[in-house]
Image (cartoon, rainbow, N blue to C red; front, side, top):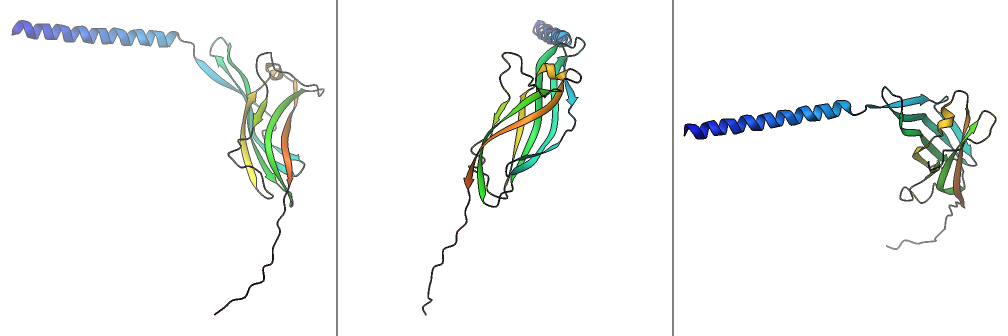
Length: 185
């Protein structure tokens, strides 16, 4: 019986030792893994009015972020532009089906700044489940998260951001039909 207790204690101590060593090993692995931080770049202005035909609104909360390895400054995730596009249909007689958009970056001379090869493009779409069309007086909002050219992060390189929208304008009519009726008793 004493031997059984001793065996149980030894096994318990052995299991505790193994758990402690495993935890120490995990801490050592965690401390050697590079720390990643998100670096934000201010875009001025951070909000701008937009007007495209009968669609008006705001491009809000514009910022550029990239993720870098702390200490070395090595880029882990390439820069991205984040913003919110809010649009309102100000037409009294036109609806619109907003299909997609694209962000175009230009330098100080107005020449486009292209993305590095393999970075994709700066297009975004509007979900069709949101609404089939934007009727007069109605509003819609879309978060934008697209690649940003690393060359644009250089001082005095970025001149402007251009927003291109693809939409289908549709006539919008409200008609009234007069129906003569009588009320019986």
